[in-house]
Image (tube, rainbow, N blue to C red; front, side, top):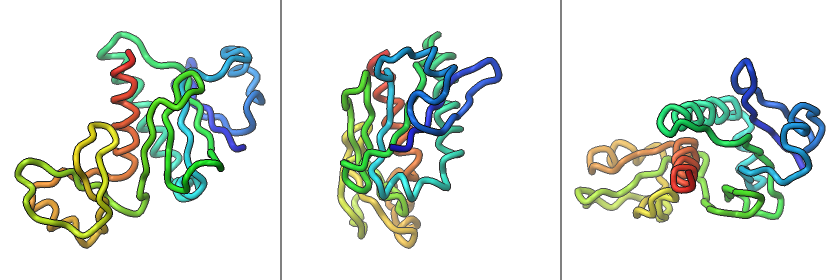
Length: 173
């Protein structure tokens, strides 16, 4: 299993890749207990987001800084793993090793979240926004203009994930 740890150190966030327990400093700080916070990606999502790894880490860093500023406390190190037993485009948000929330991402599409003013039907995959449970549709690039005109709120897949993570952390703070 590939594992990516993201931790806060003296010089800010520091990613470290490898098998769990190979990072001596991290292992010492966590002991042998399960990580308090984790993300698991289905195999297809993990493969497709390989190129977005830096962006995801930056967004998590910004989320942590915002939590520290707003709440006066951050959140523990975040462990990111590929979950081969998961659906290909699913992700789990885990607290203390237990799945707390789950979502499905269409990595090549945009999530169009319906508003009260959104009366136009769009072509795509109907779903719900995972963070707030609002009706939504995964749409292709060609539908984005139509969605904007129809007053849908558009979110890229990384933003969908980070918003969901933020809501879970905010609700448990």
